[in-house]
Length: 362
Image (tube, rainbow, N blue to C red; front, side, top):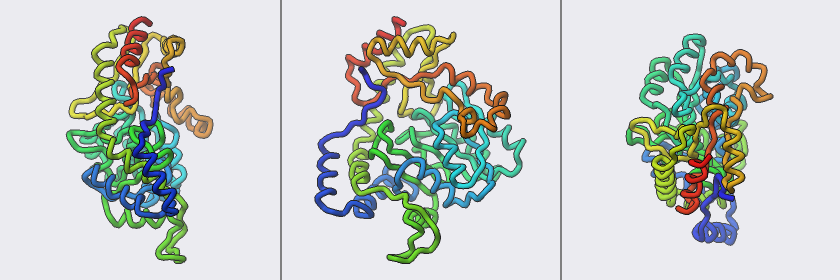
């Protein structure tokens, strides 16, 4: 079976983990500090704090920036549920915007509509979905005009760029995930990035129980630290990230050229975007998505339909579902059409050609 995702772990990661284990320093050590510095250097901007997951990164970003109970936050309806859950955990109320049909990123027009209806919005949480940047020019203008906090969810977009600038450097804060399906991994883990250094200092205390000094605590915080083992893996992975992304882009370019099935809509990169293809997500027209998934499975190809439901449809949010049914016209259409095929760096050219042939024969 050709897997939809496959973490690329090499001897470097194994050696680094072994060194950490032999050192006896498993938490709050030099690897975490170095990983934070190296990630900031990779982004060429911002102040980084390593945390236990992408979800906790989002929550810490929101709490550090001052989100309080009852604050309204606009976000996308078409994403992994953690994006909305982090808002709720931080005390906020998510307001779900529709998406752009061609990029599946949050619709700027839908954001504008939400702001017309809700004068008391505090923040926007955008998601750079599947490895492609949102329209940052228009989103930054909206955030500035309405004096809104802007948080970027970059869980699927490590190294992606908008007009030559890496995502994660536009907002007041950004969150990255290092889950095994991401463009780089630490197993579990995340990174929160702040524009202001004092915010990063506060977040560094917040993830360690509100610590001020040894045995002294300034406020009530959390245990959201990243381990030394995970940070050591992250250091190795970060050095390989550009190579991983280039392989993803190369695989995607092959699909772009050779997938020719008339019933398949290929992903479209916006002008000025450097897409890093965390997923290569197709759209199947005429209700053929489920048959397509079954056909590829029979041919030994694993696929995934990541968001078959919008977030407001999930049981834990369903009290709001009716209010969003008409508002989310595009998301409610696209959720029945999208399916991701393997694009990870571990694919061989024979596997890629087999995938193309199977799709064209469907």
